[in-house]
Length: 116
Image 1: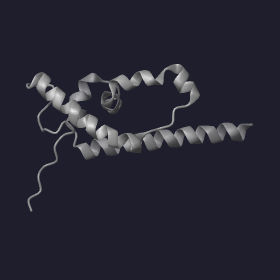
Image 2: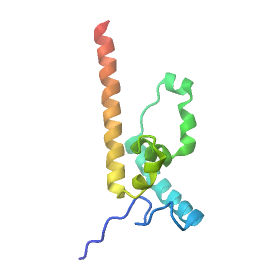
Image 3: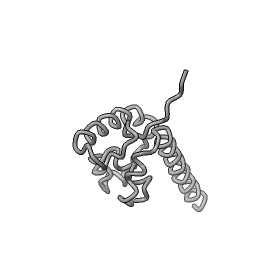
């Protein structure tokens, strides 16, 4: 059995920002959105009351671009590189970021509790 090269998260090895335009963007969005529903379980986090009051739900309109932007450290010039990552790398990095955030949140809660 011949192993094929892993494709970028867009489902193509081509840069989603060059040529192809709207058709490729729509395809990419459809593919990644399908993955997102399965990943929502793995990457979900419970929102605190403070986060809800602050309006965290407003970020849901950007769906997968929140993850792309986070991995690019907020630099839109890096989005293309992130979009061309193999899907497994993209998902694993997101899972690592979530695990780190969960740990830091719990650690801070325990420190706060210990100080009282």
